[in-house]
Figure: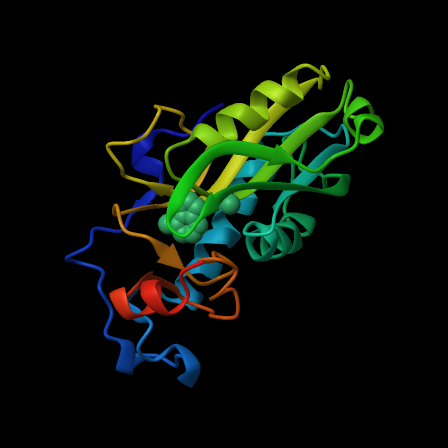
Length: 220
Ligand code: HPA
Ligand code: MG
């Protein structure tokens, strides 16, 4: 069952701008981020709760948790760790198979409009009849996920749900809303906790807004 809108945490820009010098930021990114939107500890606390909610909505049938690479990797790994300890509808632990799919559509801070999916035809065919849980870092316009879901649907999985750590509040949204969301974030380009800008910033623990300096320094 999809979550109610009120069930995700709304990171309102004004309220939740943490100062950079109140947290540890790697020295090499000092000038490249503007502010901290979500500190690492808060991300982890929220994922613990998401893991409980998600697990409690499944029966005992094995699910395939599929990480959408590369940005979803950190969220996937922390979410699965919490899900291992969470209980399903019947109060039991949930058997999970872990899988990975690489999807790329962004260059600089813009969507290229083209979505490239890395799974082979054979791997895609193996999804038939499976309960799929896709784990993504961010839903921005929603176009990438919409196209990915259209592609996967053709291979007839039994069920498909999407968990995204972030949902961007952007007027460019195609209207797609995932089943599970950690935080809604303002319409800024965000980096850290594996979210990247041209593959940079994955080694930053907090979710931050990139600065203009950062954008030009690491432009493709
Ligand atoms: N940050 C990182 N990756 C993204 C974003 C973003 O704001 N939007 C879509 N992919
Ligand atoms: Mg992504």
